[in-house]
Length: 258
Image (cartoon, rainbow, N blue to C red; front, side):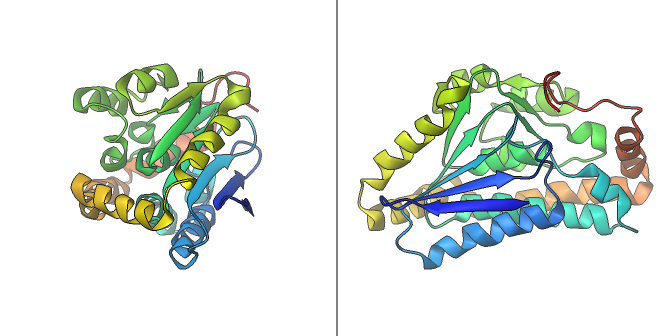
């Protein structure tokens, strides 16, 4: 994955993810993103981060083919550690993270969006928690920031897409705009935040995290992962992932995706 970055004059750090053809995140991708976000703590010139992706969608989930190709349990352990690292790095980033989402947001993509401070999304964007079809049980710890409890249960048990319009109605998407407006809208939000006192904004994020119990996120997610690991020890998870790799099960991308 290439993470292109640009620090704009107002202190807005733009991070652009690009991993063709569909932005399926490898283990390395997730750790690279986490490392870049952690570094913001040592960069007082960064006031806000805007995270977005190139291509037809924000994220097609974790790279299932990579997970299957790695020997033993290396794949699932790597993907789990990467998902944990990247989502926690967003939640704990020293500066607020505004995420711009378009097209589709699947699996680990939902976890990243769920831990962002502000979400801007394009109309029609489809969010999918696909864990049940891949033998995984984790992700609720992050996704509960996007959906009410009963709706989250239904989303995870069915793996049916949730459109951005519904998340906007729940209040978890701050701005819902046309696809060609999603990046400008994200920057408009970021610039509003950047105009505030940087010292106050950074401490306000720490305060909000404390009130929301973000320090418990790691513990909750690790507990969820324990059941995912059980399914991998049983062989159930690998078998389910293989149905995608060998083409017996379709993915979740919209029909117009590559």
